[in-house]
Every structure is written in structure tokens, then in C-alpha cells.
Image (cartoon, rainbow, N blue to C red; front, side, top):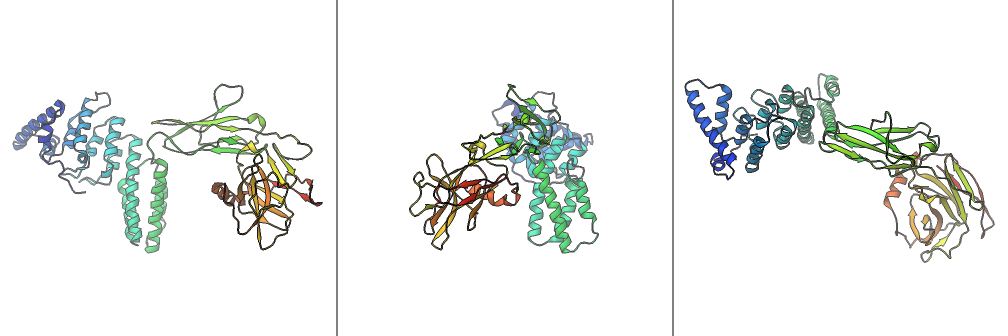
Length: 495
């Protein structure tokens, strides 16, 4: 970065400012500069004092303000307000470099500023994070040598990582693999040596595997270091209030005797977690002993007494957030008029069958009902944690003029809610993966007719992605009698 002259004639403008504090500061700097020039002529000035005079001559107001004013944590905020006023007038002054190629932040790190004030200047100076002074030290290394707070060191390292990623991507795109490898190695030495929470051992392993690199190995090494920077930013790149990326579901309906684990994904390290449970007889949540991680094992063998509302409080230095309140419960479905009741070890699923009757259904022209209506209850259970496989027997003879589709039906209005995609149709059964309970049937539809009403892409995508994870536990087989057709069929439900 070449030294800019965007603050030309800044002292004259500051002297004309309407704020007395800025005018007084400018007058004192001018008087101080004249005195130091006289002392320097007779070799009586110290190098540090002469540096302040050079800042005045080079028209670097932010440098002059940083090295002159006292911003210790216990002092008043008036000096810091002066610094903010100078930044408001000259926002580019934090990017200027002095004769030693140093930005204002370099001198602020030497003065042991308080965390809040130093954090403000770091936020304004991130564009200079890759600059190295005449002594060869970067801002990250200088912050480590001056015992800067760990949070601010990580912030500087994250800014350096994001800019290094752009540089190495440009080299890799141009197929300059060896240059990319050398850049990564030099950047690790200059900007990440001693940075806390960084994967130093992994980087040493990447460069320690081979002494000689050809183009392919240079590409592999540079890509590995770039991925390390990406993971570092993903973990430590958020500096505000904790940001929840993956939250808890609103409801959880586990199977009794199963291992149940829930987790959060939160940005804003360093983070602390505390899980709570709120049960019926409690007005507020009670902390769970030992539950201080981003995940919690509710129970290795969950039972009805684990029912309740679970949530987690996540805190860091900037604030606190509370996750969704997840209600963990169990349903019990009663036997309805002798219909099939299938027990899934805790979550009792009732599969009832209604005779095929098109009078109460709102079918499109040309559509015909090809099976009985199967009510898979309870419908209030919410989305399943894993899709279930449902076999529906049908009495349709397939031909080339029609398609056989599985549909979900609104039991109250009789309207078709959506088509269940990715169904496997055989001569006797229609097999489909469902992600929630409801009323299902098989419909014969002319190929010239489509039903896009109410289709839900999210459910279809979940069924397609999680198909291989479907558990194959036979719940129960039940013989059902059709009213229209003298034929025996079986309704199988897999969880």
C-alpha cells in the first residue's frame, strides 16, 4: 500500500473546525512540532518525540492523535471522542502509512488501550492488516508481542485469512501452483505465527510431508492451507452476539428406548453453553447438570419421564441468545373401532382404513381413486425425524394412458394437498417415503393431466435425500377388507 496524501492541508481544515477541542489539539500539535524542530536541530530531541513532529509535517492526523492522547481504560472518554471526530472528517486516515510503513493501529497496540477502544480502531483498520512495517513485523505479530487481548488478535488473524484466501485463489486460478504454495508458507510465518486457536500442527504437517514440490503437490499444499483458513474464518469469524446457524426443532417425538441427541451450530467463539429443561410442574427452566456443550444427549434410553421443553442459552463476551424451545413429547393413539393400531415402541401409530369412496373427494376430471384411504395418525405429530416407508395396496390395472400417483388428502375437505414424488409403483402396492403423517391414497390420473397444486418442494427433497437413512423396522401387518372389491390386502408401515 503506497502512502496516500488524502489528508493534504488537514491541519488548516482542523484549525477551522467549529469544535474547540479539535482546534486546541491542532494548535498544540503545531506548537509541539516547532519546539521539536528546534530541539532536533541541536540534537536534543528523543526519537519518539521527533516522530510526533514528523506526523505533523507529513499531515497524518490519526497517527498524531493516537501517539499523543491517553486512552487508558480508566480515563475519561473525551480524548477518544476527539479521535472519533478526526475519523469522521478523514475516514481514510486510518489507512495511511508513515515513513516506517506503519498505520495508526501499529502505535495503538503499543499503548495498551482498553478492549472497547482498541476494538473500535481495529474495525476501522482491517484494510491494513497485511501491511508490514520497516522492521518486518505485521500487525498480528505486533499485537501478540504487545500482549493484545486474544479476541482482538483472532480478529486481526481472521481479517488476514480472508485476504490471503483471495490472493491464493487468484494464484490457483492462474495455475501458478508453486507461487501459491510459497505465498501460503510466507503468509503463515508473517500473519499466523503464534495466533491462538489456529491449526498450526496441521499446517506444519502439510509442509512437512515433502521437501521437493512439483506443480501438483504445490496445488495440493496451497489448497490445504486455503481450506484451513476457510475453517478458521467459519469458526472464529463472527465477533458479535452469538449467531445461531442451526437451531433446535420446535417439536421432537422420539421412540422410547432410543438414544436421543440434539445439537446447535452457533458462531461467535468463544462460546459457553447451558441447557435447560422445563417440565409441567415447573414455572421456568432448570439447568441440566453437566450440559455445557453445543450438544446434549437427552437420554441414552429415552422414557416418558424425559418429556418436557428443552432449550439452551449461549453466551459470549458480546451478549447472550436463547435457542428455540423444543417440546419433547410422546403420543398415545387409542384403538379406533377395531382398526389397525401399530405400536412403534412408544410412539403409537394408528393406521385406519376407509373404503374407496370418490363422493367426498375433490378429484380432477379424469382422475379415479385406485385404493382405499389410509389415515396414518396422529396428524399433529409434526415432521418425522426420518422419513417412513408406507406400502399402500391398490386395485388398479396399469395401462399406457394413465399414471399411478400417491397423493396426500385433506381428510376434512377431501382436496388433494400434494403428490408424493418418488413413489415406487408395483402391480399390487405403491411404496412411498413420507415425512409427516396424514391421509394417503393411490390415484389414477390421465397422462395429459397434472396436479401441481399444493406441491411442496421441501418435503420432496427431504424424501429424496434421506431415503437411504430410512429405518426398516416392521411395525405390524393387518388384514383389511375392501367394501368394493373382494380382495385381501396388507397395510405395512415402516419407521
